[in-house]
Image (cartoon, rainbow, N blue to C red; front, side):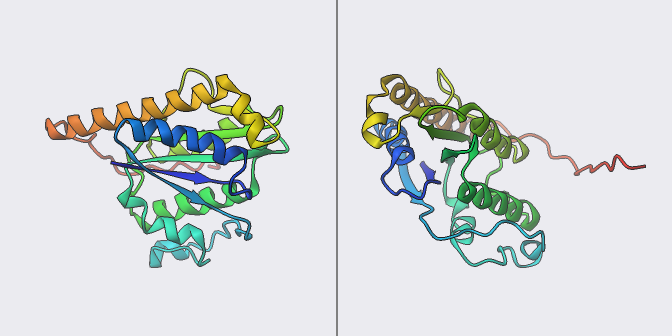
Length: 210
């Protein structure tokens, strides 16, 4: 089993990366493979609603979104990390997740269906809960079980060294990793035991303007 951890910070080894590394370490101790994927500093365009993905299966913009879109099926769980920018998730991770999940939905890939997801946020001081709520909404619309910890998944600090001093935050990260590993093992056991996936229903879309 393997979990993808996406670092939505422009800083490759910054505070968000420090938090994700702690989660990855806990997953590794439970026998779960991990990969940390860096979004980097190059601009990521927002979704332009062209629906190119519905016909080609890929986003019209050729960047890191398509790289993960074609690889997502190979992962069993996902963790998305972001710094807090003005009390919300960063622009790069927001554009990335908008396009990634929209393309997955319209293309019919279902690469995220019933796979566990979790969000991790990093801030010097405030804005963490708003960013955390924002990111969690992606998982619920994709039918992804949301993995929690013993506190909201956040760390605090202005530098990676600050984050390493946030002992409660680091513990929250480790428990998140352990909880995701437990869920993955339970899911695997259920599949081996013959527990079926939920019965699918045809999509119903309601327009409230009648």
